[in-house]
Image (cartoon, rainbow, N blue to C red; front, top):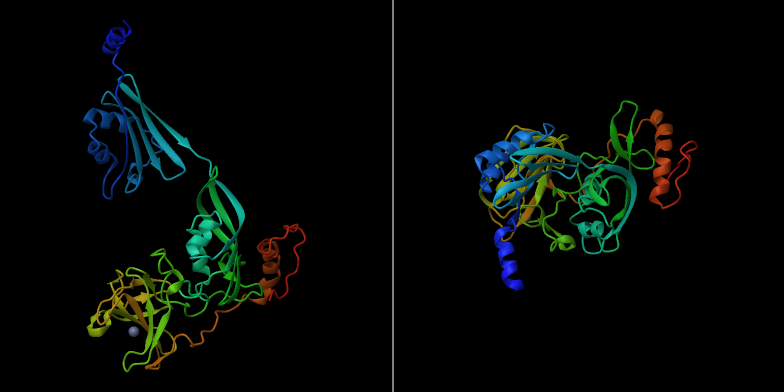
Length: 387
Ligand SMILES: [Zn+2]
């Protein structure tokens, strides 16, 4: 008796079929196009867009924006739009109409201490420390004058940092300023502090007020997440062949290559054994050359001015190359010299009049780097030489 009753009940009140699609707005697509693409009708798209709170800037809904589309019996019942991790908009069916609402998440900025140890790679070190590995990029960026993050890291190297971390609940959504960082590695120890001087300019200095900057970066390869299998196994090979003096950095195709110093592009194009190459003229009769690139970055052409850290191309194997690598060469007064032994002076240290403020500012950071309790900011310790 029960089965026919159940069947008749089901027939009388059919359970609305409920479906959920989660899609992502594609490059070049508008929100409306994405909704049509998921099969919504003109009435549903128009109704939903009209109901959306005006705080949502439709021009900002683009490549990568996540959409959740719920339907009951085939008709749109709920639409949710995730614009980044901090806000969410939604539209819910209310009879024949739609009602929109907005939810905002509170982003908390905390200054945290990070302690990471290199085991397999720099990325893994930060993941193991419970951080987003994007922090590796910020660390690599401030130490770029002293550490080649493709060649120098060794197992057991230790990174400590004091950094502003943005969170929504327990979820790390990004980082603010890197306030202090220390790289204690097989290659050497380095410590840097962010300091805003009296003119409002922020820069990084060691504990004595010496600049982090040099005329040239340590590596022509910009640290990026390319392929973990390379990690620490890359070693540069010095070439002493005629007309081929320089260093070969074996690296995966696509590894970004940056200008190691400010300068003017001498040449950028394809030439014989060099393949795609870029030559840059710097101050003091110095020139750098970057060869076998898979591609030259846009805007890099003869005569263009480039700043240090400017992306100029990507590692490849064009020209005479048996595998992907960057052939990097340095010329001084027209002759090739060894970039690995070329001494690059540091930029100007902080002027003496800034030092008292600087010491006061970095005192608590120094203590945090070493895991000690943070001193009262009313009486900062006077820091003399840290090492
Ligand atoms: Zn070479």
